[in-house]
Image (tube, rainbow, N blue to C red; front, side, top):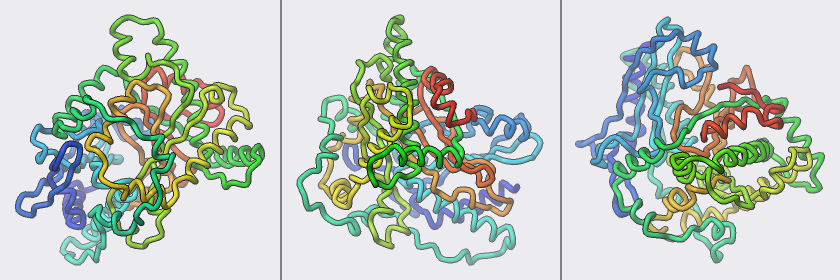
Length: 450
């Protein structure tokens, strides 16, 4: 696989995605914009790293990102890389070549303010398309027309204006402002990112990957339908969210009990990240939902930016602590379905066009809910067609989230078509993940990957 060809096609692809070469600018506390100046571009980094292990060893380890060399991926959820906000790279590519030339890893980091999963997929398909054209004929100059739209103003145009007072579902998500969140919003993105990364170094954060087969998902759905007294449609996402919520909550509570009587250093670390917080009566799952599937407008199909909004699912801890019987699973899954059904056009309108949010609103959960253990943020990417992305050398063998330091996050990826099902990537305390790996319900429905 030619790294030079990949590099050449990458820079041709970002001609259709010029926002990747923009510069970040904080127009006011907590509010960012990306400025693309053709005379002062912020060119994304493209690097190559040589691994000292063979590809077959990496493959035998189920593509565990822990085997990748240092520097192959950017393990952060925050903007870092410079105190000058305009110098922060918004996109980075790293090619990992293995010792036996048996395969490569394509590590792609793109700022979430630029794209969501849908936009990421659009870019990867476009990059692969251009790479194949150049591989066939290096003199080609016509790469077809790309109608990608990057400006977020499209959302304000196609999403209707809100018609009702603030919905109760949104009001429940509201967190009051405070001095700390306003200070965090006031800091520049680079300084803010470095401070938050330093805080995270206190935590023993790890990542685990699990596989749930197609057959198991179908059985779970049938079980939920059989034990429900409602005619609501039950999706794969409903049953997977329910299963994750039950097993994860039980694992979190066991992790918390281990930190109940520890030394000062452990107490400080666990207090910062929720292990030492007071027990809650409710577990809160935050679901990321794409509005493209909920607002009927063809213009949204060409929008590459972040159009995801959030909805919270509240589940009683008392219920989640029970053995994961079919009845319990059905009750939790129905809670997920009902919350998902509340993402109406009016809900979307209030999120997108409901007025200018206060400058610190996005930082309040990070600051004031950091000590809440009973929570999880879930993004389901399992419907995306990542395994159709062909650069000319075949489709990927494995697509996954790489290392990150942001805890209490779950991301669902599709498995390779030959395998089927879903890969679930969980990021949290190593102790919580260890409890997850031995949870009787979870081990019954999933296989540990790494």
